Image (cartoon, rainbow, N blue to C red; front, top):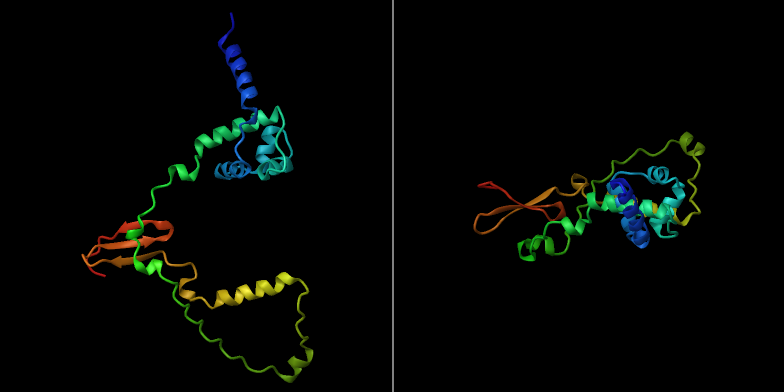
Length: 191
């Protein structure tokens, strides 16, 4: 008669054979690893594989081969049980009628940045030793410079955006509309 451990081992072997092709898509593999806070190197060490192989599995360039495939599938299955997809446990979105008109209209024009403090002109000695600035031959350098100038034009008071927008309706109901679609009731009597 077989022992319980022998029976479980036989069942596990059958499950590995059946589940050979049951791997989530590459993007989900990466999401599960990152949700668990694991590095590719940690998974590679556990599966006796190279870190590059784990990276290739997560991008879909290659697929793991047996017996590593079964172990990787088991790891991903355990991670999926602990970290379900965000769509499955996300709260229902607020109805469109709850969002005030201020959020549905066009974005307001940014306020201009304060004018720079004028600097004194360079002295004759400084201008004779100063070299003209060279421009980079890399095409990305111009793009990076353009991005920094537009970011400077934003209002510096709100460089990280508003935390919440408070709104009061005609009935005196006060609500705070927060980042990420969160809507909170505010127990304020006046604003």
